[in-house]
Length: 154
Image (cartoon, rainbow, N blue to C red; front, side):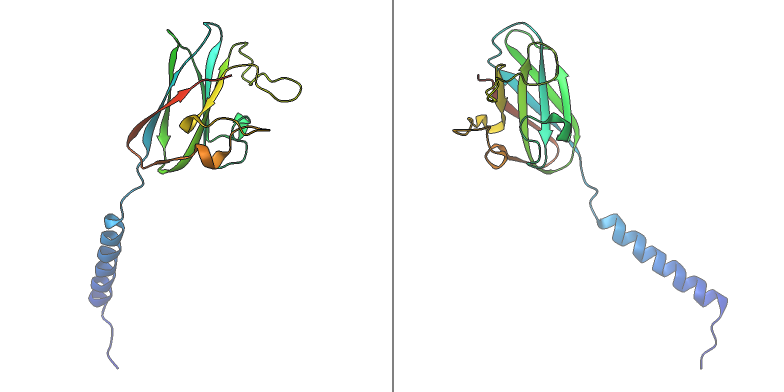
């Protein structure tokens, strides 16, 4: 049987660490990006624009508490832009509302019909008896920088 010497153990350990470091260095790091949502067709000069970014259907389009990110922005001349930072590559949908009364919620009638202007990615219209479906509003985000447009409707 061969006797191990300390220098052989050190050499083997160094070689193993070198291979492991090289293997991890070849893996690309996930890139995050910037998603800009350009909103148009804003009909009044009151309130603020609220944007929500969803990576899953749960909560879409009206429960912004379940969104991955949400923000409120000012607008001018019937246009606004929401800019989401640090977005991982994936599949997303966006919902937008014109929060005229600044309560950070989409105002609806007793039967759930929106009373403030709203929109979603891909400009998907509402279903016959409900809001737009998540799978119709989704788009692929590869990272980097991307801009989409959303038209408000009532």
